[in-house]
Length: 469
View 1 (cartoon, one colour):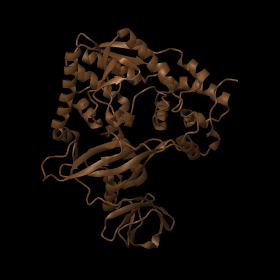
View 2: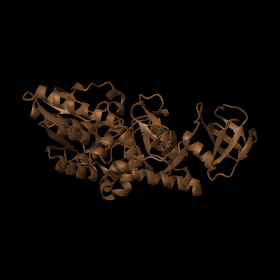
View 3: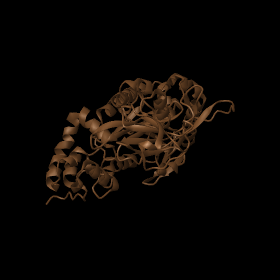
View 4: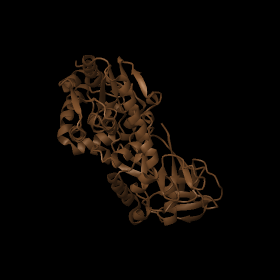
């Protein structure tokens, strides 16, 4: 779901709403998906990617102000667009074959690189380009001393119209821009500046959320129990805080699948202590690994785990509770199906349960602004780039996230690897099936084919049959 923000070119900060004043200099920025801050740990990684690719010029290429990020959904694995200094600055992407991150400059970052002479560039004789191959001799004035193989393509008027890759005496165009940036903002900014500039919009969202919970509680008090679903993720943490702020009588519900990250378990305990709410814990079946040996690993196209670990245990819990209002942390920007939800809705699987979604209209910047200004504890996995928090080996996770878990939580991952070893032997596939987490698809999915092609092993592009023979 695309998002629109407005970048103040005077203060170098994103604005959550277009300012009413006509004299404020802003740029409209459209992002690919939900948008959030680029966290400090990610900024440090960005510096490392810059240094690795651009050498001594890397420091000059870093954004001057704060950066926000959105995830690119159609990439093979994990790709994030970073917006800074007035627009789309660069993209970082996880190379699944090499299991490492890389960076590519975009409009605003390319303009900065041109100013700093950080990468090669050349002037074309026309104002537009097409994707394809140009000869280096097609460019009139050239600078060819950049460390990377990137090549900025300029119009005769010095406007950036595209980005190419240098291959010998050729330039292969990979990006073309019909609306090149006219300037890159140099003003420094901080998140404190962002909070101050957007405080009215943020507090308005908070007021709406708290007011919705209070009104619905007063309407349903004595008729239904109020239960806040709590996953240990950022959205449900905010909803818990709003419910506490609304001073309603509720119970929080945590579904412990037995496959949670240790960071998730820790934040559940910390937030429970901080906010002081009553917590019910659903204990999922304890024989998940045995089920995997029988059924095969859960996959994006084979989601038997959802019913087994979440829906069935949750259904049993709510059946005992009777009619209830389930306050949830769903947001419209997360998916097309959620974009159709109302603030109050009936749950299809549990018609006696009324769903209430107080942060339905929030985006990621609203969420993280609330967390920061209220000093609310949050799951530290977000700081290293996790977009969602769930089971540590969830097939919906990106390879980048699973690879991080495999490296950092080796004891946890060894349990999963032990089961996968048995299945790998049974279905007669090589070690790349585990290395690149190809078990995330059972059938012939497009991304499975692309990943097999990227790692150079099409023998793994087949339907996996897990039944023991």
